[in-house]
Image (cartoon, rainbow, N blue to C red; front, side, top):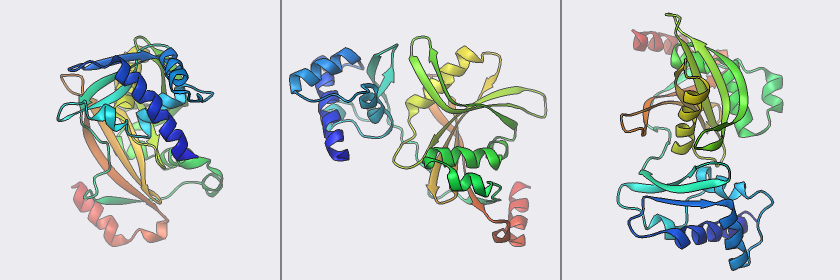
Length: 267
């Protein structure tokens, strides 16, 4: 069933792209109505939620080969929002946000309440709960962080609807105030540069007086969490500022020797 859906979605998104693409294009715009037209021409049944087609290629699946082969070396096509029901394929520098397998992992005593761990629904919810109850954002950023809202859905001028898995605000030792949009990914979902761009745009519009620090979290394996922080460079492109891996363990599994090593590393 999943492969049939993926093939159906690939056929639709490829049809829309090929119909509008011209050699040398850096942007190809389309809207939801074009997906309906493509479905009629290809005699493909549309899903109830047309947005699921776009979402799948933003965060889960690679674009069809017919689209990928048109991108120049070192660049790749991504799909971005361009207003309500409007989208664009845009060329970006090739960036995969993946945990660094060579990065050292730090053990943290797991403070997740057992009842929360038992009933957390899905990888994303389980990951957000672990971030919150273990104060991993505070540890990672060095700022006292407080959850303001989760599953934020709002609109941003020029983009349309955007979503952030959880939004934190924080204050540092100097009294500076921050906003932390957090994207959390587990299972087969991928961290996407487009989401990080949208988080920065949302913070500029909704929280212009706060310092925006975009963060993403990814499950690597059971109870091991990769945290990333991003910034925008002078060209407005997303760059990774830092990455840390944390292993949530029972207190009994954190030895005196490991604590001593962490103390030496900090100094």
